[in-house]
Each structure stands twice: as C-alpha cells, then as structure tokens.
Image (cartoon, rainbow, N blue to C red; front, side):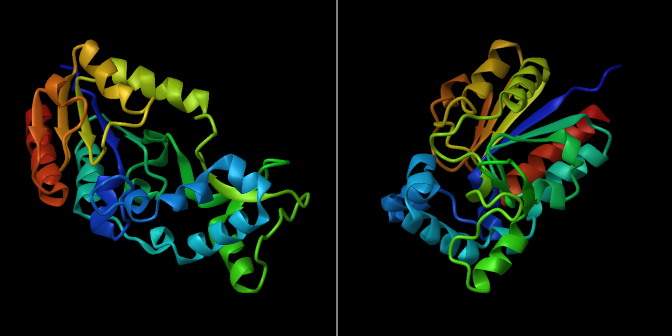
Length: 244
C-alpha cells in the first residue's frame, strides 16, 4: 500500500518560537515599522545606496543566522524520518527545516534563503556570514568580490519574481499530495497561498494550523488555533501512526 504524501506549507509562524519575528501578525515587523518594507524591496534596494546600507545593518542584527530549529521544525523532520513521504514548501528564508534534519532536496524555498548572498550582476553566490563579516569589518555596502556588482540576500525581495522552477515543483506537489498542512502562514501572499486551494481542489485533506484566521479556513477540513510548537508535533505524530 502506497503511503500518503504529506505536503507542509510553512510560513513565518512556525519560526517565531525560534526567536524570528513574523511579518504580518499582531506583533509583526511590517506592523511595527511599515517603512522596513523598503529595505527588502528590489527597486529601492538597487536604486538607493542608503537603503542598501540600512539593509546590511538589518541583516547584521538579524537573528535568523543565530536561530535554532524548534519543536515544530523537529516534528516535521521526524515525520520524514519515520518513513512517511514528506515535502516541505516554505515561505521562510531561515533554513531551519534543513537544520532540523529535513533533507535539503525535500525542502522547496519559495522565497530563497537568507543564509546566502547573490550578486545582482554576475549571479555569483556565497555565504551570508562572510558578507556580514565584511560589514562588521567596515564595508557598509560590500560589493561582489567577483565582479564588483551589487550584492543582495539570496531571498526573493518584493518586486522580484519567484523562481518558476521552484514554483512549478510546489504546484506539482500540491496537486499530488494526500494531506496538505498550512502552518504558521497567513495565506495572504500569492502565489504561495493559492497552493492550499490547489491541494484542496485535487482532493487533499487540508489542515490549517495558524493563530489568526486565513482566507482558506472555510475550505479546510480542520483548522487548529493552538500554539504551533505543541499543535503541530501532536498532529504529525497522529499522521505518522496512520501511515505506519
């Protein structure tokens, strides 16, 4: 008997227990400082050296690179290790699913990764930690070491398109899965949010684990409002038993 494929769409809410703030929740970054959006908007970033300097300072202070996986990340990895087919589609850029033990090939990072930088000119990539070290050594806006071009985080900024190959694979997983769990996502940002609807349209059981209401709650088979750090591990333990 073929085991069910579990697709997990994770948003910022899964990482708040790791000390990474979300963006759109009651205490989210965009509500506290709406101007911060400019620092991650491609047009502003490329056109204004002061925005880039502020962005590098934000990255330097960012807790993402120092964060550790929490119980929810570990529960996802444990479900995969139990033999259940699992694919993670994440809106997050923190790399915590992989640090928790999920194989990188089974994690689709829709919005890229904050753990690397990329040159906007020659597309050379390198570790974010190395670029931050240059900032801390005095370079306010470190250029690409290969060609001198503008460096940015290897994340998808506002104004940039998602990688069509990554998005295409996410769509295929959403159509093929038996269970689709949206966890810690407001399900407001398209096209990622629409994956929940795609999964439901193709017969998947849709489960939403999120503190706030989402536009897809009325399509879900189950909506869980409990804290993610306890609710998700409980849910995935049940799934593991069912697919054993």
